[in-house]
Length: 629
Figure 1 (tube, one colour):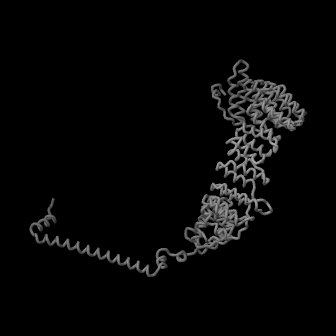
Figure 2 (cartoon, rainbow, N blue to C red):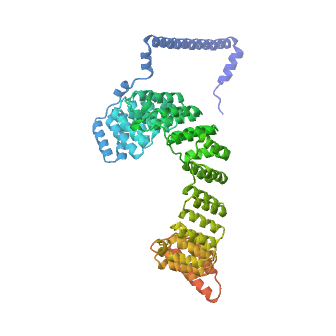
């Protein structure tokens, strides 16, 4: 390698060792450069801080207006920076035509082309109104919210008509969140109008933010309200639990208050666990008259107060409300009696009866019967029977035909036929005549007891006494005959029913007749019933086929199975027979053994398979492939 003389490192080393003064001078030069650089950096920082202090002082001296202008230019300054599209009016007309012709997507795409350039703020309120109405109709609520935001950003002040139309449409379609979005954007810029603000209050209540509804009541009260419009105040008060304001509003309205407003006031009291206050208001309201001379207090009013007392386990007050209802000619309903049963009767029947009859105020027949019905429904038959016994001893009420019907059915359901028959004697002793409903209940009791003889005797006695049997009575008699194996009597009853009682048996009765035959494996008689039904012109249904088909499978009546399958799967009215029923029939045909029987079964199996495939019934029988089907 060629050498070009001493290297730089060797020269510096030589300077350091050969000339110490030169080395010292070099070190001093480096230090001086560093000091100068540091001094310049500090001076630059001082100048920067001074500039910032001067700027801040200038902002303070010129005031908030200059500060706001520097930080955020006003919309009026921004608009001139955007060059208005020369065809803005033509485009607006075109979009409105699209909307009129229900071409919402085309109109929206054209709008977006202007929106990208910031030209959307120059469109008129009429266009935005048309867009919002169309968007609501097609369910594009995101477009509605975007249009409202653009209206707000562009400085528009929508008219009263705009707000009425928009909020009505949103409310009617239950788009409550969009209503609240509009309120959040425009706030007090929205006009004071009862239609507009009622939509906003309703939206707040429906979306579970009653506090927002309460904040709007002040402006709502400034609108021209009719007396019925004040119901929104009560709806809001019950939502926020403000009893004092609700009561104050009720007293302000006086006789102009409606029943609904009063019931909302009572609900507010009950929700606040103040049933006594609600009861006091109930007494006061009886002195007021609503429009058209109707009473403000109704059954719902008492039900609300009773519910409040019930929640507080105040049984005596519940019963007192019941007596007051009757004193004001208000009949208790199922809700009234259901609440009383839950709070009083279950706690003790004797105590409840004493409460109901205290101060000489006996229970009337309707009240007692409803109580018995509620007890039976709740599974408390002993308490129901005690009230029944009290009714027989009470001078103010006596069991009627409805009372006996309820109690007899309850006893039959408990398989207590003897006590049910005892009530029939009581009934006759009271001069009441059993009807077809009671007869049907007793026949059902005979079926449960497997007492065929007694059932026929009761049926004959009641028919002789003039009771006209119903279709339900026929069903019950057929079940009784079938249960006891009296199939011929069942046949005779069906055959002569139309002549004797003027009503033609239906497919339900024939199905019941066949079911009784199948229960005792009387397959031939079941098929005879089917043939008789077809001959009488009664059309089979899915329930009948689903009932009879398994019986014919059990009897290995393959030809009859094919008849039923063709009727069900290829008849004028296609029936939906459970696939498992059809597949079971097919499997039994294939499994049939014996010389002639096997061949016949195999042939019919092929026919049944073809019917099922044609009707697209899923075939799940596994032996098909092995047997060559």
